[in-house]
View 1 (cartoon, rainbow, N blue to C red):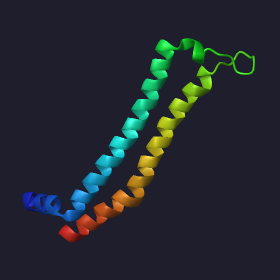
View 2 (cartoon, helix red, strand yellow):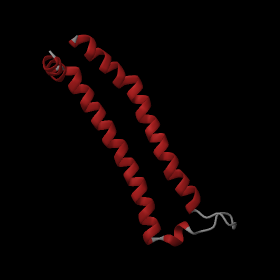
View 3 (cartoon, helix red, strand yellow):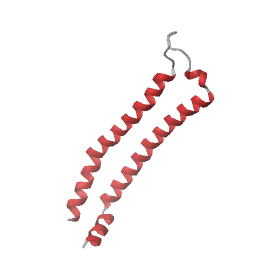
View 4 (tube, rainbow, N blue to C red):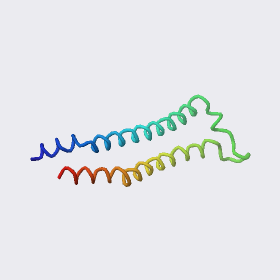
Length: 101
């Protein structure tokens, strides 16, 4: 019975749609995070003077807000994924379950 149910779910057209949408969103958001992190690390490695520049002549450097932006952006992108998952992916999942049971 369990294998039959699994087979029906996998053959459901909305399951393919769910997998495609989840995969696409996950790859896009992961790519954005990787680009941000690698850009920051490469800047630290090859242009440290750029991040060491003082903001408004004080002790705070450009690197501090840039680093905070990188960290906060990871939280924001996670929030985007969670919101999309709760709104769209959960609804598709519910429809698949209803149709297959």
